Image (cartoon, rainbow, N blue to C red; front, side, top):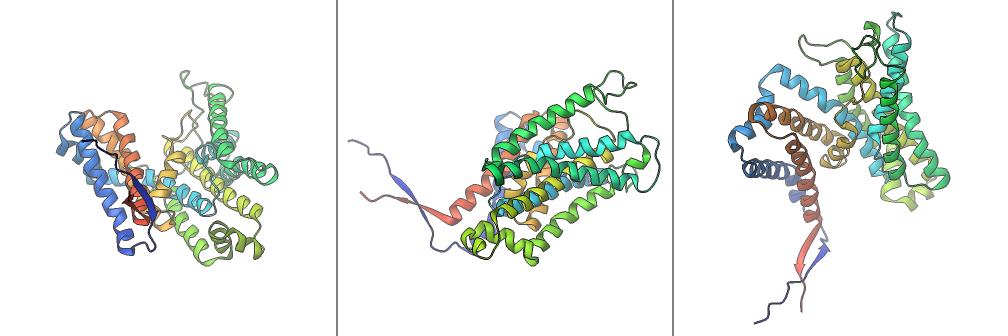
Length: 358
């Protein structure tokens, strides 16, 4: 008897179920936990103890909560700004490079004024960091609006340029002469450094500012004219053009927004937890923010819990390495699962798979 292959087809649902859509986030998180437990078992680690170390143990101390907020805040701010661009079909993939340039620009100002004191030094450093990120995003914006160059390619390639520029500076002219030959800049002065809000933690006022950014972006997208301009440009380009919203202005707006937020995130990192310039400022927050944006379904307020969840995977991965010996790459796999399950569930909410009639 000859077996015939089953032929399937994907067809869109006429009406997506609101109940199914609401169930996607919790089910995706549950699926991620179950899949990560299976992964830990296949790797030969005790499932219960490793899951506890990964998802629960970081939340048992004040320092763990502060580290969670410290890592989630830049992810939330950058993801919310990227989501605004994604809603307008402008795909900034280079937030990591804009973060790096913001750190370089702001850090350069801090290093240029080692002995200057005053309340205005830190705001100036942060402002220059924002401008640095915006300047790095302006290059893809210019190429997109004037020459039609795809911003996905230019933002991504400029990320590597920014990373190499930072390395050239900390290995070269900005290297600390008293740093035991380590590739790092001198420590910033007290006037250019964010102080911890809670003793024995690294939580700073910059963290609170970063958490406020998604709320501000949500308000602008929902209630301000610029938000309507961004949303209509992505959802109905022809109608937006008829209303007088030019595509060029939308591209510039969202790239400047995401570049400025990334630059601010970078300068907050180097003036806060790090206190100097080093070759690797973050473990890839700019790229992870893309995952957070889609995990939060491009909604600035939903992005905040999504950022906390992804940040927990960072801290949990480190904790599981110490307590269970889990490989570092396992945390990256879990982060990938965090993106895979929501996207797969969203796809099934909007589409159905049918067997083709013969």
